[in-house]
Amino acid sequence: MALEHLSYGSDATGLICGYLFCANQAGKAISSEEAAHWLQQRQLADDGSFIWLHFNLSNVSTEKWLHEHAEAPEEFFETLHEGSRSTRIEHADRHLIAVVNDVVHDFSYEASDIATLWICLNQGMMISTRRTSLKAVDRLRHAVNHGERFHSPTDLLIHLLRDQADVLIGIVRTVIRKVDEIEDHLLAERLNHKRANLGGIRRVLVRLQRLLAPEPAALFRLLQKPPAWVAESDIQELRQSTEEFAMVLSDMASLQERIKLLQEEIAASVNQQNNRSLFVLTIVTVLALPINIIAGLLGMNVGGIPLAQHEFGFWIVVAIVISFTLIAGWLAFRSRRED
Image (tube, rainbow, N blue to C red):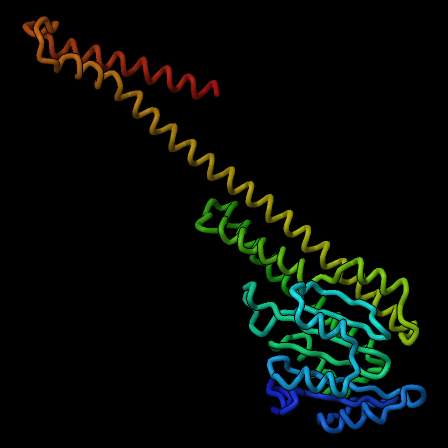
């Protein structure tokens, strides 16, 4: 792939890349001027051509250009600034509005490494905007640059969703390897700080499931009542993508349950170790109790201390201390065995 295809900069209008797709042909790169001219002159009824424009929202000129040339619905611009970023696809005024979350490059399971892509598409165009580079978009650009053919803007969206599902599958596989390693350490009784690691992995999975998984209700409504311009083949492909997401989400839910069980097992092991330490401390305290009591009594500076003048008084006291200590130890261990 050429170096210009790896550039994440944008032109003066905020356009990162643009492609024109004609019937049964690969995408052709176009500039923002050519895209504006095509949007003014397009005829949606006959030729079947469409464009894909990918913008950088960090460029202040992006929204201005979209307002002037894209004819996107107001719901799309409202979506760009709303707080909710859950993945979803909605139907609005002869357009489809999609919010797609993906991971940025070198994803290391940090919450801040999740980026959002906002998409608006109709029969003749797909507009995508982002603030941070995403893997799914780069995969789609790579496919277009290598001559892969797309027959509709919906086909581009389906490709994005499948790439997102592939990213989720890769993350799940990586997490499974980490959990397997922690489980091996648990079985070998070499826990170290693995309990904290499990907690962090579980939190990341919950966040990924909330942000990357499409909203089932929105997809269900779209599949039940799709726009008239969406081809039946695209609807079937979208339904298959939804099923793939459902399988990945099921794997993530199972993995979260497995992590929960491991956390409980580790917590039980830690509690058992704490109980053993507490038992040892209790035994030491019990065994030291008789000698401490007797030493305290005999060490008082008062008259009448027994055996003070006896020839074998010391050894008698030692025998008494040993006897009481043995009795206390026997009672403590007997109670432990009964438990």
